[in-house]
Length: 75
Image (tube, rainbow, N blue to C red; front, side, top):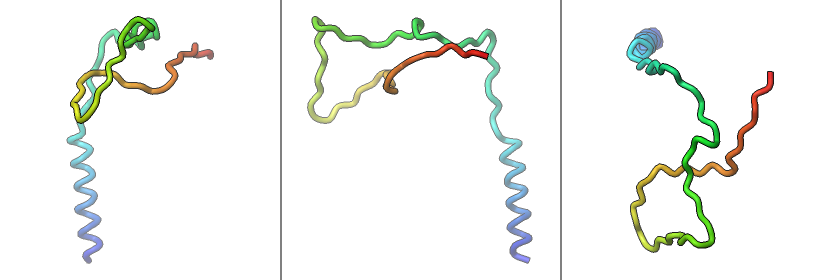
């Protein structure tokens, strides 16, 4: 009998989770950006690279994911 109660409660919880799930926003005119549309931080021999020592909190939007390449999608 306990298994039946657990199954019913689980089924009700799953239905409630499905009904309360947020919907993704609708975006008009959405298109993927190309590599030339990103503004990435750069460095050259004449620019100083900052170094941090100790414990610091850095804020920014830099995400590094190795080599950034793009390929054409061929059908």
